[in-house]
Amino acid sequence: MRLEKISIVLVGTTHPGNIGAAARAMHNMCFNRLVLVDPQCPVGEVAYARASGANSVLNERQTFGSLVQAIADCDCVIATSARRRSLAWPELNPGTMSEKLVEMGDSSRVALVFGREHSGLTNEELQLCNYMLSIPANPEFSSLNLASAIQIVCYEIYRRQAIRPEATVPDAQDLPATSAETEGYFAQLQQALESSGFLNPEQPGLIMQRLRRLYLRSELTRNEVNILRGILSAIEKRRD
Ligand code: SAH
Image (tube, rainbow, N blue to C red; front, side, top):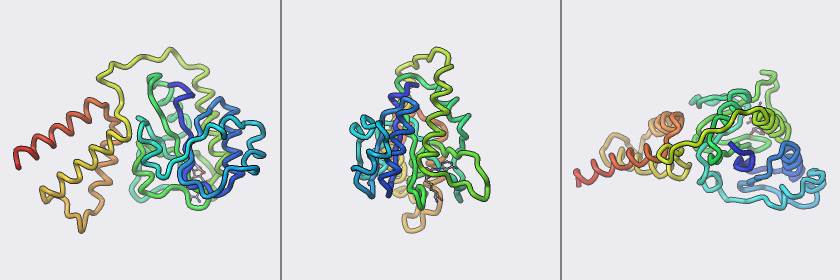
């Protein structure tokens, strides 16, 4: 894992001061890829003032309309949330998260996704991610300020990578699939389940969410996604 391949993704941020404070927290820990998804405020004077000199992070930010687009080229996507969800997602804490990242090959592209100040991430956004990271906190008051949460996560990774052993280079066959590749498979799978009658589009229940969780948890490689898509294509072809 390399810090320059890790994006800090802020979804729907409403306060420019928080974007500036996020840039500062990142730059302190040597992170510089800031990605904004559908920001609800301008990145102007207030943001630059709060960045306290971390201007390069703000200047080089990227902006996307949706989370799907922002993480398309990432092969490990970690959502952060203070809240437990009704359909529990594979969970990490700061320690297990940084351990996981340090073990990854240097070509891995990672996204750490942070939610809106008032409402966090939606369940749909969470379900695009491989893991959910929650920072242990007072159970009665567990929601941290956005930039404070970013500071803790970035510090944890920075600290771990300073003492990491040599990274291993994965075999090309074993490169992790990107989010866009996995989403392509999910779309094909859903279509196959609907056309076979297994899934009723009028009443889909939680089946797709459970299947997403299963596949995202297993950190599919490119090769595995190709096999899964090939299986569906072969079955569809035979049926047609
Ligand atoms: N009221 C919101 C909290 C938003 S705090 C909610 O219920 O979800 C803004 C963002 O900071 C969160 O979306 C998350 O990305 C991050 N955050 C805050 N506290 C956190 C915690 N304890 N663990 C992990 N992320 C946290």
